[in-house]
Picture (cartoon, rainbow, N blue to C red):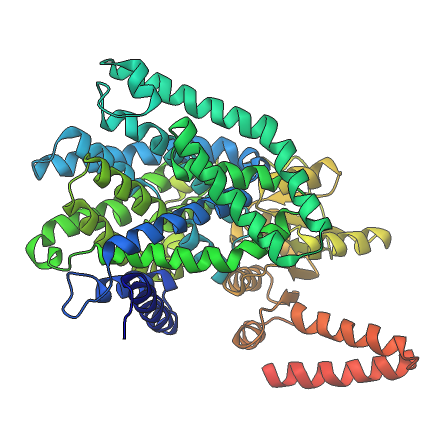
Length: 579
């Protein structure tokens, strides 16, 4: 029976990726590790590998387009502006350090300066996919530290997009290319780079001026047609069509075109639905991209060039993390933020693969670099969850140098309100739960003070005239500033159980008799908080479930007292079981 190479490659890739991803997840690793290993298994360097790497590479191009489209679709200038003072200089500074380290180590290997620069740039970009998963597992996405880390990576991604735009011109100085910029520039590499930037700028301007008006209207008309599959096709046509047009008409990269298509769609009210409709295909082709990258990996590099691999891993895990930590603390944004950002950046991922693949195809990076970068990616991504699990340990160790801790926190706002409170409530965190508690206490003239670490949230609370202390509530000194010794209640609204435990233990050390109410993440965290001395533990997910029950039963005319009794019984049963 006849089977085409395309079908064989698709079957091998998806079957191997499913198996590899499942094993990786069961081991507590990001699924991307499994996809990369799946590519290695079915690739040409492994005995029995049957997939066609050239076909896989072409399919991976679609994966790159949809990945970049997804990044653009979730891109927000507000996110950049909020953390810009630290994310912009931090991302550029850390990229510079990683690039210099890449150049330095490549010189020891006998590579050219250009090859070393490209290697350093490839190692400077962390994986957004891995970062978001790590932050989500530790409930850090909605924290100030998480916002800084995400904004930092967005800046890195934008910087990499610029490199992707410039790379074809830089790779072929002297007009050897066949693009419009090469033909006009002749033998002038400087003019060719300028023209390439001009073409990209023209394309960006057209997309932001014309595309932002045309594409959302086109989507709206498709929605009115009432066909879901037509809407999905339209999303794919926009992503692929704009990407292809950017490459053919403006000499830009497919990645830039797809990224801008996502940004334009982000301005539409239909952006959320567009993201959901494109998600299954994006995920499928993204998996093909990671598998195709794995197929290019030659495992022999681990035995033939172990020092090269070690050097790459050292740059990714030690060099980048150290640079990020020193930049954050050097600017004065705190130990906690520095440690979280350092852990977040101690890995490389999809953008590194995209940049490496393009550089190798243009001949500005040796083929062996792909195996080195991929080895560094697999090792760093595998180790990243373990690095994140020890963030609290690293912070406690580093905070022992009190002089450096004070230096690292110097940019944080000072508390201007003199606190002379007694029998008050100390509220740890001014998120949704904290704000509701403040509203209730204020309405009854009960004394309270807020502890908030996010400087933007702190400023908002301070502008509202609320008594607040800036700092991390897990720090005993910050708790003392909130007069914890004279407080009656400590309300810990953190969603991260480990942070809540640290805050509870610190408060108990200063005020053994204080009444503590803490938020639980369910499961074992509830029992841990109770053993730490928390008087009352609240599980938001369980409580929201009870509210659903109340609203539904109320609509059937069931008496409120009966509903209340039912809720009380379920609440007692639940909290008794989890304890």
